[in-house]
View (cartoon, rainbow, N blue to C red):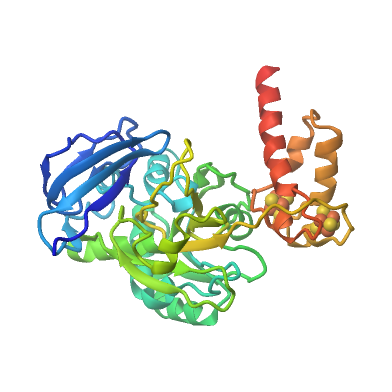
Length: 408
Ligand code: SF4
Ligand code: SF4
């Protein structure tokens, strides 16, 4: 039986056409923006389809030429201490590290050419209920995670990088076993807040204690931020001159007692084929799919701009695919002053007061000073028993105030 076609989503215009034969490792696109990675074909095959997705990139359908697909690509690792060579090589390997520190590893390395980072933090935590309190990646591949972190620290000239684990003891112990001999500091984050959120890592775990806004380069706060999977892939690449194409993807379900399932996937593979429950959710309007944990990851919309169903594909570097229930909108009730929104806000805002200010003085630009601290995590809205749209209002107010400032 022939293997199913491989569907890849790529951001840049492909340089191949329907019917063309491609070989594993062949470049499928060249970026117009030189900071972005190119995309290579993970298998030998024939281009069966090419669809442009407005604002999202292009879907490529590759029909495999054999029933088995190689799991690794042979690529020589760059010289250990040449940042330019790393950037050049990484750009040829698909969307490498796009999820690191909001902006991706390549963009952070480019910035490191201009300003020296003071710190490197590998975030090995996925701790947000109902998700596991310990990083499975850190527990399973602790040695490679430590080795990859050391390699990157050497490149950046940093003597003592950090690996940040979640509150679970097992992953902390496992990483510590491999870290000491490599001069890596291991820090265990407390479980109260969503510790894997890049903004909060920068705020609570760096020397500068600066909050980085969504989309900003962490080097503005003097830090390079990567996730655990990036470190593991770097270690394997430098040890073997081979890059992993197939990798684990954990499926996390909304129920608190649900066990996470791990599947082996190729970047660009359709995720709905991985589990019958995912397939069943495909057409549900009440389900959201998120890559990464809910507070760091990006939402994989199930509908496109025209309301058509999209097939999400496995990204290059996120370990978790979370399935989150999209609650039906509830009628809003008056605030009962329970204080829960202030209790959960990870940046210590007073959400209900801010909400009232947004309502009563929507054009007051001074509001922005407080709103700039909102990382849009949505926790306040999530816990509010009166279903007051706190986070949604803050999001709209930020856009409104930015528009006002552009007009003035
Ligand atoms: S969304 Fe709410 S809880 Fe999250 S940072 Fe903003 S105000 Fe705080
Ligand atoms: S959580 Fe909701 S009801 Fe409670 S204080 Fe905040 S806004 Fe008011």
